[in-house]
Amino acid sequence: MPNIRANSGSDVFLERLAEGARLRGVTVTVDWFDRRFEFLPEALMFSRMPPGVDIIHANGLNAFAFRRHRVPLVVSEHHYVLDPGYRPYKTAIQHAYQLAVTGRASKRSFAVASMLVSPSRFTERVLKSVAPNAPQATIPLWVDTERFSPTAASVADSTAGRPLRLLFVGNTSFRKGADTLVPLANRLGPGFEILCTGGLRGDGDIEHAATIRQLGRLSTDELVQAYRDCDAVLVPSRYEGFGYAALEAMACGKPVIAFSCGAVDEIVEDGVSGFMVPINDIDGMAGAARRLATETGLGVRMGQAGRERALTHFSEESGVNAYIELYYRLRDAHGRRDVR
Image (cartoon, rainbow, N blue to C red):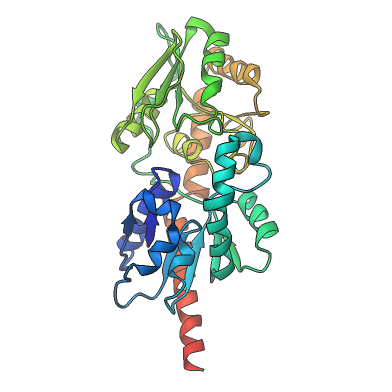
């Protein structure tokens, strides 16, 4: 599994997949490459592959560089950076860079993939329009539901004497909706508190507001505790190929307040495990938060429904096993071709 470390959700995915596959008897070698290779992924063509490899699994940014090896190539793409639907949520500089570097690399990887894997039906639809001839599969992402789990105290329906705590987990980008937090805090007032993690890329620069508290960058155990300590999780993303924060919140028994975008709709059931409001509808998010603050038992019921959905639809067992089955299927098909 060669990967350029980008401090993003794709890194988390790879680490979780590698760990899960090892626990199920698969020998996995993860090669992490410095982020400078993102600017010239072709340079990875000179890297060495460990002996005895049956499958190479990489993401779109660098997968094409390993096609020289005569083994099946699995390519994961969590969201396609040149999707026209993504364009409004990035700067002109970002778009130019993706046209010249990351998007171009992804297209090269799609063209040589033995299997192109999406984490959601939303991303699969996007990729079918870009790479209609590539073999494709959809395998939803997952969460360790034993580690990301509620405690008896974390599902207690009591905010007496304190503000309702809303947690934002993510990098401070426009796509992730970090710019909505100050306006949301101003609408909600002193009866609410918004807690912000620093995401995988550092503390970020979310504007200050009296009811916003920065938690900084958290370890995994600290992040789990932050989910348990909050009352609901904010996912104001404007574009998502999946939506880890929503799933992690649900696994921890917390309701989600999210913009209805991309694949988040496939994770959160509106009115059941959380609230889905139109993109940029800050008033809608504020209204959802107020309902959780005033309707007794609503947060607990939604949290329980989310936890159940995480267990039944997004378990580590189902996700990792689906990848392992794919690996064996591709290996066996490749072996039959070699025999011929």
